[in-house]
Amino acid sequence: HTSNSSGCNDKSNRSHYTSFGLVELSLLDGTGLFGGTFLALERTYNSATGNIIRLYHVDTADTDDVRNCKTLGPGAEASCTQLRFARKTLLLEWTRSGMRTLG
Image (cartoon, rainbow, N blue to C red):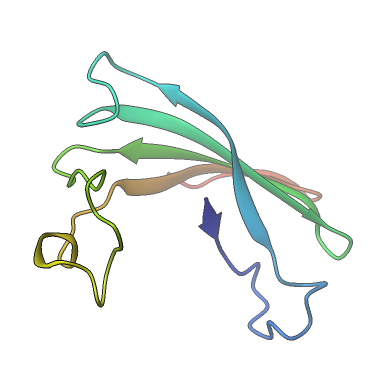
């Protein structure tokens, strides 16, 4: 799950704040979750912007396995504080205005 702002920095006005949710994750190679590459489809909707749909390329190569971490970041055990997370590259975005290619 990813949270992004849709260009509006005032989070007190929730009608313009957008939270994206993962709706599809497809494996692109045979490597699997650890070291594989994926296409991720995320979407959101609110009355101010309508639908926003984003397609990302996700690369999990050289990432850390967090299955045994009780928490992440500050306050976590030493092995779970300095982690390498998956890299996400935005490829396409569909909005009310149409589609644009980014990656």
